[in-house]
Image (tube, rainbow, N blue to C red; front, side):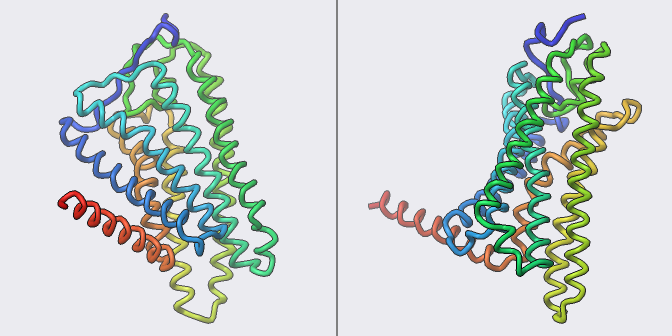
Length: 316
């Protein structure tokens, strides 16, 4: 039996049969996430009209999404480019830590965002008190701190586990369920118990989000304006759909029995909960928000204008 300390590197799974296909696919998704979240961060940070609780939480979400997708895809793309599968032991530990940290913090933040919308729509007279600047900062800090604590617990509990089934992971990044499959001692049961506890907390967050949206939908149905109802539903339903996808696929990945595990299924589930949400969140949170779209247009126009001026300067 060899324990984790004797392993110096792990072997990751290639996502596609050809490295060119994997590189192009992940590069396209990563650039979309980078541009979408980057535009939202710039637009919210530079426009004082967007300095409200809703956009403050959206700014935090975009930062988390950028970190979340940057934890996995760049390493996978680098491996594809250099035609290798290797990730160091320390790199794997860092990847697990930041992945769990950002994933957990994002889920807690999504719960806060649903609460913000609930207060705004169902308790508008108390919005200024309940969602003051100080309260929003404290809530966001609590989400980040909770994600950090969750990551510390899982990382510290996973990597001391003795591993004796090689160092090949059936995933394109270091994932806790794949690491536990390499163990052949009962020590991994501690991490399984911690995973079950964390998953139950995440599902309580999802129930909170679901109840918040139920109250929002009830309030929206009482709106006299059909246009207002349509706008609210077309905004809230995609949010809820992405959150549901995020929670359900993540839970299935971490709690499914080994008998249901297969390489193709694990890959699909990993993409659905680790790659899709950070890439589509910018589109979903901005597609029905005219104010945000206008601010993003100004950011893009400014970039194009400055690029044109820079090109003219170089020509001169």
